[in-house]
Length: 249
Image (cartoon, rainbow, N blue to C red):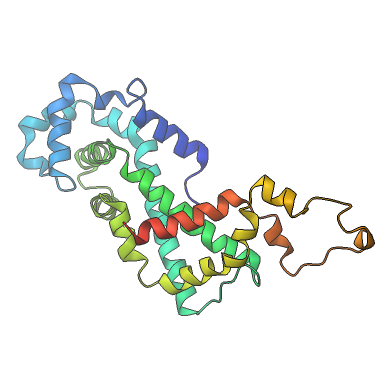
């Protein structure tokens, strides 16, 4: 269960965000009215009853299918990743999995990383202004070529509509997962404060001094939470921000 590859995401996000790299169909003045019509009616387009507005696309349908396929199926990959994440989170809740970063480090860390990755991906998706135009254009070309919409289009179109406001939507989604997520984050209460110290505080506490306690220099350090000592502060802050930004939005 993997999100779209960074290279694949990067190509699509960069192209959509750069006016010079956008698919030509989104900036072609001859297609402007057709694109606006598709976006306005998204996710439903009555192609057979609006031939006049969409006539210009008829000539381009083969090229649209060819050139927008990467973009369209990247959105499909996002949808499938979302489906797998939701299924996994439901399974975790059903199995009453126990999360505590100081007890089952790998499981808890991977759970929180998954939540952050999922949240980040859905927010990025909502910020692609041309998402409706790209998906709608591709589906129109598909319908004109094959006589029917792409099989993924109904669910994909609905997902785009549902995540117009991603934070509000994910607040609703995570209500059933609140206990698992809260337990995982509460377990950071002994780890995060210790890691989130300034250099002066570390220096004053002589945490990095080899000679502060000469009699114990040869004794190996023992800790039941050793993996937590190497946990990235940045990662912990992302987990916390992700949870509480959603909670207070």
